[in-house]
Amino acid sequence: MTTSPLDSDALMLATAQFLVQALDLTDAPDTIASDLSPMKRDANAAISSIQLDTSIGLAGFLVYTYVLNRVGGEGKTGLELYEAGLETLQLAASRNTPGPRPVAHASNEEYGFILATAPGTWRALMGHTPTETIEAQPDDALTSANTAQIREEAAGALFDLLQKANAQAVTWLSAIQAASRQAHESGDESMIAFTDAETELALFLLDEDSVGSLLRTMNLMVATAQEQAQQAMDPEANWPAG
Image (cartoon, rainbow, N blue to C red; front, side, top):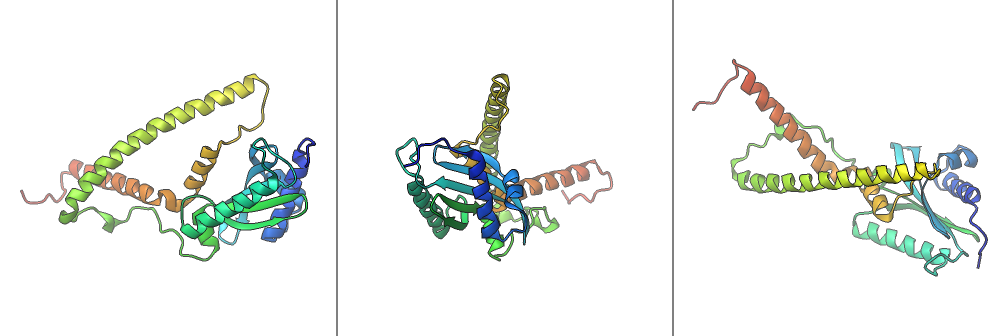
């Protein structure tokens, strides 16, 4: 098994060559390699992100690269990780569970590659109906009297969850800022690698369908609140009969 130090430049170039072949890109591999952003590096595996111009516009992708004959910290070869990673992504796609969707994969004697993207991007690339607009529409007003209880309970739950989510966001921002300062003070100017949980969260947020309903709700609530405030301040507003 391979034990020599991992050559990052060779890894990036090999990954770029895979992308050129998988997506039929016209850019040179060394140009693609310079656009790859490292997200995680292990002894025998790496995750990189890249934005590419596709048939649906600019889209974000993840590229998993495995050094097949190298043993990692957990005693597994890159080949084992490649096969397990591909199986996991394919299973998630077949079951329509959250997580990245595999777009292409390939391997040679030295490397294994998996190209993946967010579910929403994958659906668009496959020609499925794109996510509907999240802009609030005039006929979206919440006026159905028989749904009052559902609205009340859902609004209360959303309020509680959004407060908790915002608190977690404050915690995460404080931690990432502290990590950035520590890296700067130690002289390490390289990008702080995402953890597995951060990678999963980033992909979740990249998919419009993941938070589309939430964004639509927030836009609708704000639009409705602004309209009601404007009516309250308008002396010529048509008030309902009391």
